[in-house]
Length: 503
Image 1 (cartoon, rainbow, N blue to C red):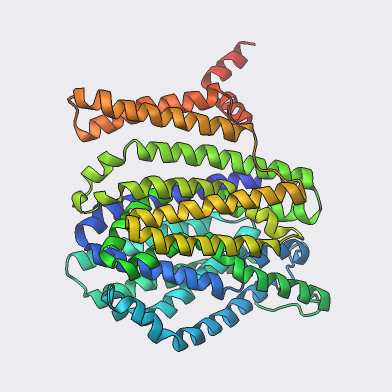
Image 2 (image 1 turned 30 degrees about the horizontal axis):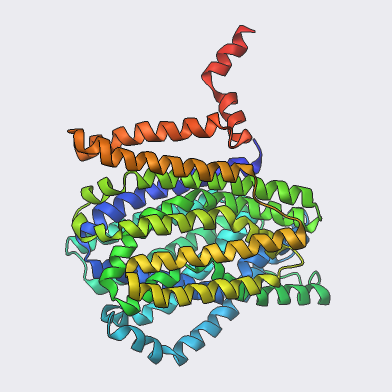
């Protein structure tokens, strides 16, 4: 098994362990001990910090991945780590200056509908700094093809620390002020753990090899970094939703949206590992002008992420009503069911076709990405402004889905016409047709079987999951949507081993 497969599997396991902890925390701790407004506060603070840090990093995350193959020379990386630390520090100082200049207008936006956020507004720069370098250190680990520990830190470590914080606050052992400080501090702790892990690998140095940074290379890095500063908004379009909701509807509805979005976020968990480990390989293939390999990798990543994310989405959707019935105070959050569907489909699109964004960003055509990002960002903002007024929290999710549809249609058209890169294949069409049939089966189950089956919520959900889940897996294998998946299943099938032993 190759390093990509090993690290992807380990990273996915870390992600799903985090999902399991996050599921428990989100649905049985947050909904029990925090108010809707307090849940909304934590969500808006984190989303704002991530959005600010994505701009403050000055494109460093993408630059590290793109230029690491040029810097790498055995165990000597010619100071790429030191450079990756220095550039974001400049970006953070610019952000801090802008934050001070525009603090009053920003406070004015939220003071009316979200006064609780205004009380903790000045914690945002600290949280932004932690989120900034947490991401930078994760990317440095990914180019070294070591993503498991950083994934454990982000997906498990932060959640466990926050779980303790939620319980301390829920049992009235700490005040809300202390709760917010500890919540922000969890990201600082994670940042430091990732830094210590990188140092332990022995492949990094804060010293920048200035002799290796020729004038032409500095210019190329500078151009790419400035460009990627704008492009960084692409991966954070969903963050606009909570920020717009907080300003237009208040933190309580944002809290409902938050719980629903936690469910939808599970859909893209596999791509967090697969994307992190596949990007350096794609960057190398692009550098070598190996476009056959780029096409192969693009199709493989896109198809398998499409397949996995749609199946995860389906398993979530067929159980969504039961889930909202089981969580504490579920009646207060059931209004987020529509968000789960709309945002879940948006996550399917983003995780399945973001590989096209990676390919474009690593190619010589990367300036075109700025056009697509402008379309995506403008669409997301305009859709949020109009849809939220019409549909509330469902409007925020619909805005994200609509913006992604426009973006990926334009992106994939460009990739084919300009670069002859096509991440789509017949497997995508098969999977789309299959999910329509599976959703129809779920509708039939809800309307014809559920009313006549005298089962409890949990038993009914388990039975539906077993039956419809088994049908979906059997359909994927029987229709041979992914030959790779079929080969893996056949290789590890106990029946196949029996047949081999008999030969």
